[in-house]
Image (tube, rainbow, N blue to C red; front, side, top):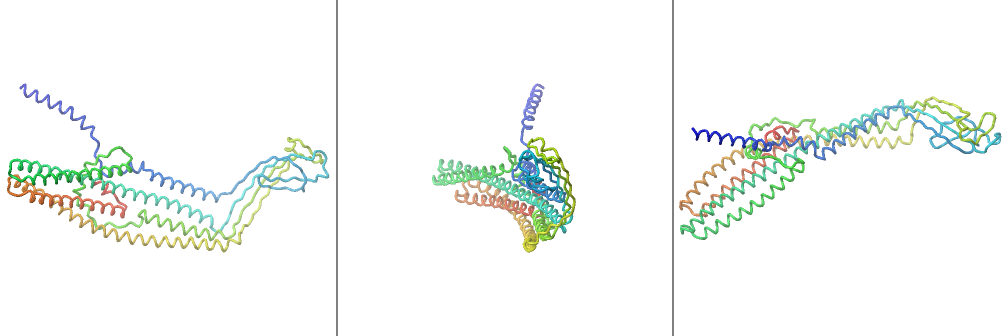
Length: 461
């Protein structure tokens, strides 16, 4: 009974210690778990977001050009008053005076005050403003499509770096297994040589193979660390727990094989080209219509004060410049036509329309190439999956054969050179499976980019 109570107590203590430690373990990631943080923090995404906001602000600025243009000014000046009578609407920095200096009495200098408001509303421009507004909208849509295309390329870059990390981790594990196997052979050979059952040369050969494998292991440690640093550059974190992905890297699911995937015409890359073509087309139309006349509604109101009163007495006092006021207004319509731009704007418009035509042809070229690449990629993925099944079986059979030959070597039934040859075959089988796994996932990443669908890759790696 006492032993039973002690056993229960020890088990409870062990569980009490184990649960906090288990709770502190970092959460295992899939590739998809990394993406939200990359999208949120990577500076390149911020650049594209700023481009989208800038395009939207440009769209609002162009649209505001269709509103009436209202201008106002106010000025007060001090100077001579020679001039001719009349109402005026001067530009800021210019002023006018009324009256003749010969008929005035008083100071030779007078103060003036002036304020005015003018309105200019372009009522009709043969659709130029509408086309400019459409061009701004197309440019805004293009910036959004370019952002989507950038996010797509960033997803692929993240996938490639994650696959590279898993590949280098698999290579590191592969070299560690080779070191462990060769160390076992070295110890066995050393014991057999010491007992006189094997020549001393076998001990040296086993030791040499072991040392070389340690050097290979050091190399892959560096490669793995470099791949990890490159991944963290995108992730902007301190560490990533990718242990669960190491198994999925070498043992992918076969349910991904689907030859029915197609290139969507709204693919971000194609969509960006389409929006670019639209922008050039409407910009060309706007450029052509800029050579046509435009009809304006004009209006204005002006207030003027002067130091010259109605009886011809002129005052040099600054405050009197706000007296003797006059008020004037105007309203009318005007036509503006830059005739010399007819020739120039025609060729500029044609140039933009040719750019639009070029973008449309580029769209067709990209779409055709992407469809061919997707079909080719799907064929490769299918065959690569078949290869993975065979290399996985080859690794298992090579491992079983190696264990049997190792037992025979320890029993003195085969030589060291024969065992090392068997070990080399096992090493090649394991390496072929690692290389096939990397090639498979790289093909899946490329297919995901072509279809703009990373769900399978993000959820299964």
